Length: 57
Image (cartoon, rainbow, N blue to C red):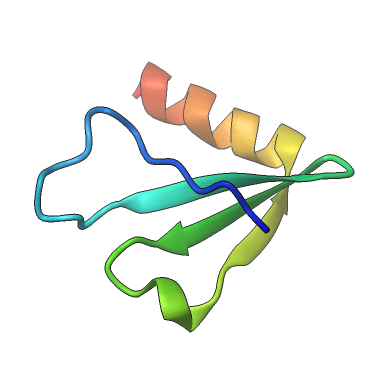
């Protein structure tokens, strides 16, 4: 079971990306408005680089 979470900066309509820890160095991402559509898995280092890039933009 994945413990999904979203940013406290998310809007109230639920249109955001949710993140979940998978272990083994992987992070899961899914669309909060369509959680039944599945998720994508990315390496933790790739996700950290994405977040850092967004913060530096």
